[in-house]
Length: 210
Image (cartoon, rainbow, N blue to C red; front, top):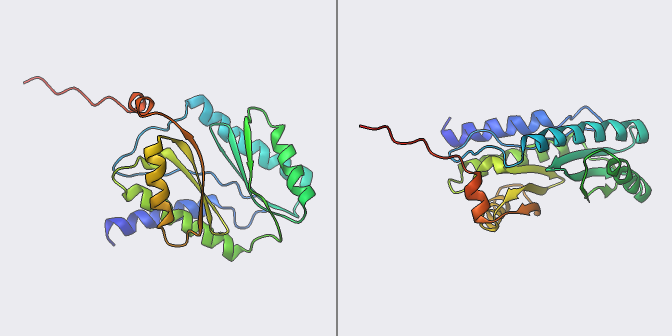
């Protein structure tokens, strides 16, 4: 197995493990491991913890208030929440958004929930594989910091979150769009300047004195 296939297998396994195929409310937590250009997470440590708490509390409250008739994925990045999945009625879609809006630290919600029957396990598995391919493609793109992006795929639509420059956003969109299985790309990105990015990058170690 060559290096690219190994990365694809790793990313696909990661994506598959994060989609709770047997649960009513799978918690999809994005992120990428490995790669040639891996930087630290561009969120603050506090924001990372808050995002984890937002996802967990949101999933729990949805489960308590709506029950098993819906399939909802909650993804938080820098306190901006993406809602995907399916609900039977428009009222349910609005109810889920209201529930999440009352969770502490949520600053914005992007509601991409579809009013339709719940997706099948086969569809969810296919989406997980697509996310795996996207993450592998980002890892193999030598001009991108792969873990600056958070990837979610729902019914063939791939959502990309992160704090990136306009240059990175355009490049990532091109990479994602050309990935097998991606039908549409939705960008939910915070654009930062190249100067901000430079300040985020780790300082290379000093050359040892001879």
